[in-house]
Length: 318
Length: 165
Image (cartoon, rainbow over all chains, first blue to last red; front, side, top):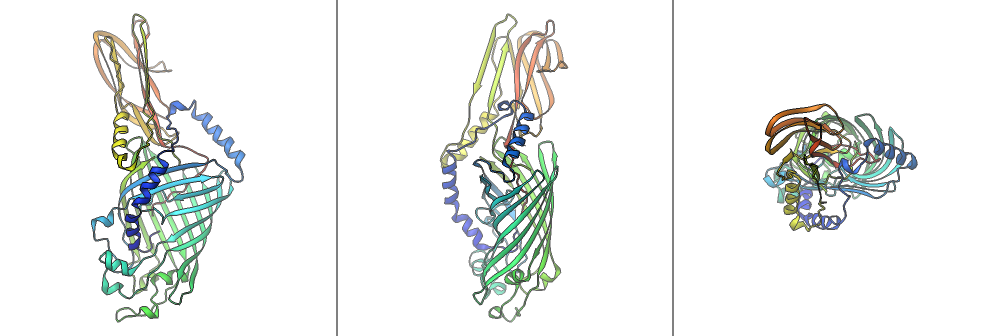
């Protein structure tokens, strides 16, 4: 949910390469037994076993320790709605990420598996409250929006000084949410009701708000391809929107009047495809178009209320 | 919808039977686990990939029967895997064989007095499949080769959500 571009995010990404190396070393010594269909007598019995396990675990799916790691090597075109922030260097398009999915006894820690540059920013920590066959209720904690640091944008990413100078840093928005998931045959609907905090405002007060995030994703398998179509609608309460695109009295300049933003919505449509290249590598590509409410465009900090993000890369699955 | 680990290994098992009831079984199993430091990761991965693409070949004076590719990889366990597989047999002498999928009686092809044959088939299965060469005269299995199905993500009872940005 890249509402804003965060230059520090990129810097951190490079700085976290050592973290990737350590995690790789740690987990390279643990591995699931690699399996083929030969290891299983029948897929039917496997499904039965999974069903029995599911029943035994209700209402909470107390699975044993399971993990998955993947390295993401992607090129990402990731424009933002804030004026003066551009991807202008080749390095900014390369967003490697460590994707993981760890669960134990109802707890889970997972990154958004399709998102690049998800070392820390896309991580969700949660607990399964209720697990039924077709629906599920979780409590989760995650960063719902990335922040941005105008000073870093100017210094490290050729951010437009005229537009960005004098703006304070915006932190990420963290939230605790109830997530309802409804499962269908080849699709999934999720609804997050999140209470969030976005750090301190210019008066050192914590900015709190509400985010209601919904998303529907449909899987269309075609031969060895997984093709997903998605659509989402998200509501951001006024405090949150104002924190990111409002102009405080201390940020006013000749070209930047004071501005108080209203709450707003974001609609998204998404296409994503993945194809295995070998037992470990897969190709993936996706495109997401986001359209924000028209009132977002009224902010002096914003130059557009719609962006299209594109991702193209390969995944290595451990 | 499910998302977990469980990649396929490169495992091959080839059985060859000769006309004179000389039976040879070769079983080769190797499990590739990535237990290497980061600096060796890339080269190790490449090595694994090369192994996975090797052709199962049994060199015998009688018949060589191979499948290429020998492994079909799908994203998730349980999903049908699709591939165009080239099956090839050759022998030192001209012989007459029929090609079968193990467990099925329908012939995929028959050849009279040949010593080298290639055939392409459309593979579609969620399980590994053995292919057999049998004699036309008495339906004896002369050679077998296998196309294995593996997957990148194992099915689990825990479900995951999908989203790009």
